[in-house]
Image (tube, rainbow, N blue to C red; front, side, top):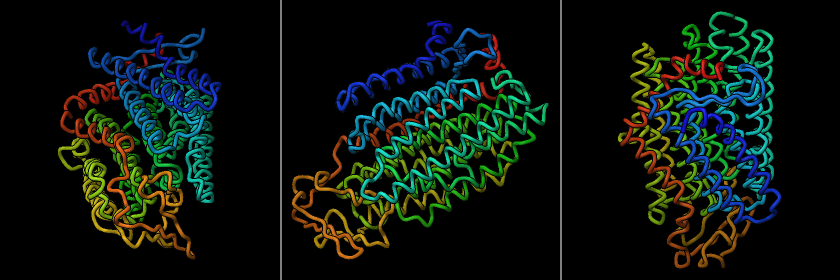
Length: 549
């Protein structure tokens, strides 16, 4: 297929899911049909994204651009793809497919609006990755956010309404604020440079201080969306407020699209200007450090993982702060690795939360004896997150360390090593508290599980652990409320040996297998990441493709 033909098809990444979402809304409450069409649409786009990756790999890079609308380049609506875009499309669509699977298995998709909202979310994600216009980026970010609000509320814990309101209020408020701030920056850019087309703005921030300041406003807004220190706390408080399935979906999409935009804007508009790189090194090193320390005192799995998500975002963005081909390659590799690993961790611990009713560390214990598949899956992803060989996390961190040594950022190297150690300790904390040591209650407790108000997870679904989620052997059990304690009566003879079925465990297993493959086959992914990094380090081809189409 010729590049021109591929270019004409690029808008379908945004148009197809939007069209399918509109059709599904008219079909009413047909959840099976919704699930099939939803996954089928995502698989079609995933295949197309993989085709894009293959095209850029076989041609050793390049850029494909298509202008929508009867206007000249620089004014028309540009859809542009290179290797970086193709890799992001492929991984985000893969995560969306797996998250839909997990949502179906965990009963988070039992609404006629779930599939349309996910499809509209995908429209925004794909459009944001493909656009070369800063105003259109704002439009697609809003297309992402609007269905996200709906997904958050639909899947939130209905048995804890105050916590649900707190989480969604924080999530909506922060995103509305950052969208407003980003749009102010875009307005400043248009006022100073006369355009919001990324290609037209190429390298202008290097030569015009007003463009650099205006761009910095938009970049700061994107840093808030990406949860960079010091504006990071909202993520760890908002993400655990919805269902594990939606948390896993958001972890792979929202912050990662903001990170992609930061990489793209700094490489093109700022031309990788070395004068500002030290700011990024300082901020992103602090993000690594403060994020991991934030997880130390937490007592629930999703809050711990959310703080570690903040910390790992520091690693990813350090690649653009180094701004060498090696640093960019390492950052892109780390980005792809982290999207897979973090979603796997949210899904494995989420499966426990859904079936056992709590994500509080120590409230359960010894689950590895009854749920060995989930336990092994969690350990694989946890070791990868901590950077232990032979998993993908080791390759990603090693490459970043080498890149930082090459640029002389030794302090960042020390912080990376320290944060990796604390990350490993946090993962062991979850492992021992949930999967290994016997907790205050568990699957084989005769006297029952006691969850007090002091240890209750404010975001967990213990209140929604209902008989229909249990097996036939436990449906006769009842919960009694005594003061501030919830006592779930159990008996060793009636407790099932396993509560997490194949459908619920498989999504996290699939992602854990992928991270192992990323580690063992790191050379191939590094090659793809290197091609993407070349396009960022020298954006001439990207700019010419946008302006000449």
